[in-house]
Amino acid sequence: VAAHGLITSPTPRAAGASMASICGQQIFNQQSSDPAGNIQGELQVVQSDFTSACNLWLCKGMQFADNTANVHSYTVGESVSIHFDLRAPHTGVANVSIVDTATNTIIGDTL
Image (cartoon, rainbow, N blue to C red; front, side, top):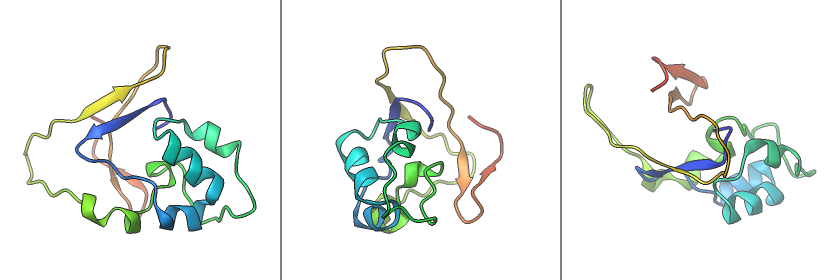
């Protein structure tokens, strides 16, 4: 998400210890204090503990290992209500994509 907002339902990924070790303490602190913060802001605070394994453009660098309790399963054709909290006081757009996290590719069209 390249915006000032976040999905609030279904439960989204959150920052955790794995993110801190891969993306660095500063990015972890920033996302922990403001999960709606933008990726560009994170890129401006990259420190020496940031590793190449941190992909800020995929789930804002939040790691699956920190979020195993937040896995959701759906059946083909099932409708899923998604709630997105826009916090920025300016216009913009948001999209929702289903991503194959193994390849970092979008499955199907954006929603």
